[in-house]
Each structure stands twice: as C-alpha cells, then as structure tokens.
Image (cartoon, rainbow, N blue to C red):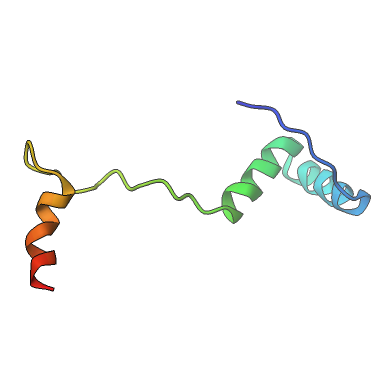
Length: 68
C-alpha cells in the first residue's frame, strides 16, 4: 500500500479523530473507506463477453455498423 500525505483543516481533523475513535479504527482506515465510497471505480467489468479466437471487437461490430 502506498502512503500519501495531506493537509486538513483543524475542524475536519477533529471530526476524523472523533469518528475513528468512535469506530475503534485508524484514521487511515476511515479515510480509505470514505474515499472508496466517494470515488467511483471506473475499471472495466470482468464479465465482458468472450470473442471467438481471431476476432476483434471491430470484427464483431462491423456488421452492425454497416447497417447504420
């Protein structure tokens, strides 16, 4: 895991410390949780359809594109 450093206003730091104590977790863990909730994951889904051997997405889409 990579370490980062950031600056927080005193009031936000106080909220972070209070919440981490209430949850009995680390500030780092709480920040990670908040970031995971707020930042969308734009990775491709792993359940993409399989292409036949030797075919590309272009090959599959070409007949549809010719109809347009």
